[in-house]
Image (cartoon, rainbow, N blue to C red):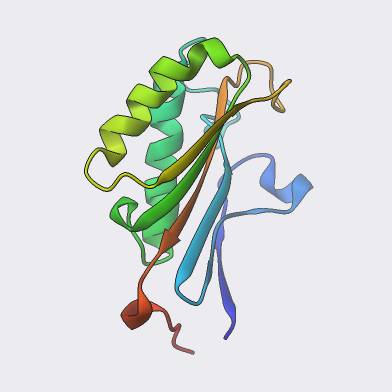
Length: 136
């Protein structure tokens, strides 16, 4: 088995050395997803709900590039710079995952790379035994 790496459009990716997603067998891992666009602008500056929505949108794009979808997500982790934002972030998460309900963790952290970032989200998708092998 080999891993498939999906390049990240993040301006931080080259310096830090990370991918948007990695597919390994029947798992797709997406980490470090923030509301920063390719130009380094924060989408939803000051709005935790908008930032969470942008994170989840970007996770969907990364999953699709690895052959998965949001419906395949089995676990998420949400990192908040202020735990008072739990409700708007949770609302955005719930809107995306209301029918699949992956296991989820939400924790407060001291800071993210840019002080305008309010939330960072990770996701793990499982493709099932019949979709787990990569060709090539």
